[in-house]
Structure formats: C-alpha cells, structure tokens
Amino acid sequence: MSDDYAITFNLIDVDKDGRISATELVGLMDVLGQPITLEAAQAGVEKLDKDGDGLIDVEEFGAFLQR
Ligand SMILES: [Ca+2]
Ligand SMILES: [Ca+2]
Image (cartoon, rainbow, N blue to C red; front, side):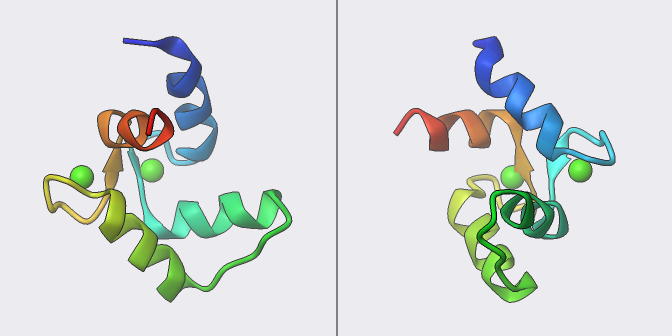
C-alpha cells in the first residue's frame, strides 16, 4: 500500500473508523476552503463508493487519487 494517500486518508477520517463518511467529507471541504453541503458530500461519496457501503475506505480513496 502506498502511504501517501493513507496518511491523507487518516487526516480526513476524524473518528478513525477506517471509513470516510459524508460528514467527514464536509469537514474536509471546509478545511480546504470550499465548503459543500451534506447532500453534495453524499453524492461525492456515492461516486467513489465502489462496494456500495455508503462510505469511502482507503482503497476507494486511493483509487480516486490515482485517477
Ligand atoms: Ca470515519
Ligand atoms: Ca465503500
């Protein structure tokens, strides 16, 4: 596993459950200075979510960054 995106992932994963939720994505975009709504975050999660659990795991996140 490449550690670069794992480190980024851990920064976004505030509650450390190993998954990025829509709520955590909202927090990330706030930090980046590009606030989004929870609805937009949920749509974003759906795009990255390959296994359909409604959350982004580190593999799904890595696949997104390496596109
Ligand atoms: Ca989390
Ligand atoms: Ca998923």
